[in-house]
Each structure stands twice: as structure tokens, then as C-alpha cells.
Image 1 (cartoon, rainbow, N blue to C red):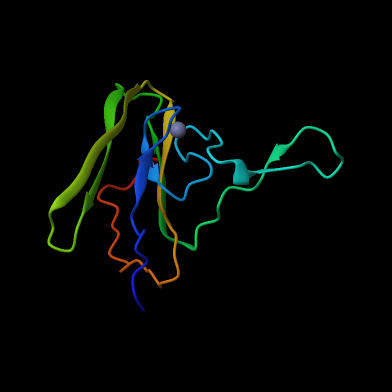
Image 2 (image 1 turned 30 degrees about the horizontal axis):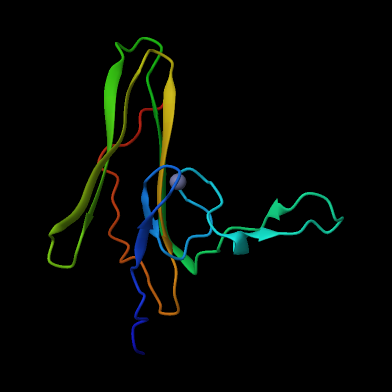
Length: 137
Ligand SMILES: [Zn+2]
């Protein structure tokens, strides 16, 4: 199968400046509608509504974990980092997504996933690992 010549084409979202896939009809970061083909007329003839966003071909992985600070905890700070590497281990992207802190009894849930688009098959190699078990109160 020949690769699609526009594979990997990107652009900046005009609303939030995030780099997104050229094919996006709705910005995955700010959720603004970006192309008119993302709009469809309402069936009852009233104001047009946003069509369903372009659906990913697959979601090769999704990770979700909740960190909870116990009632008697001293609190802690966190930093959510996402790193993307190629098949040679070279970093393509490293982003600090969020920083914050947890006071006693507070929790935060972190969810990271990959949406894949295209005709070819893609799969996770299943080597995901949770380095620390989340604290349960
Ligand atoms: Zn945006």
C-alpha cells in the first residue's frame, strides 16, 4: 500500500494556535469548528449544528489514572509530561501538559490517548507500564 502523499500534513488552529492534523474539522485542543464541512443543517430547519467530529480509524491506546492525596497527606505537586519518540528513540515532542498541586483529600484524573486516522493498520505493542500504583484512600 502506497502512503497517502498528505500523510502527516499539519496546520495551526486559528483559535488556539495548537498544531493539529490538516484533516481536522474540529480542533482537538479547543474544540472550535474549523471547516464548513463540519457543519450540517439541523433536520428541523433551525440553526446549523456541528456535525460529529471526524472519527478516528482507531484508538491504539488510552491510559487513565487517578492520583489521590490521603486525608492525612502533606500534599504534593505534579507535572504531567508527554513524550513522543520515533523508532530510533529520538524525541519528536516533549510537552509539559499541566502542573498543579494536590491538597489532602484532593484527587486528579489524568487521561492520555492516541487517535489514529488512515487506511493502514496501527496497533500498540502493548508495552505500556504503570511505574507507580496510584494512591488509594
Ligand atoms: Zn484550537
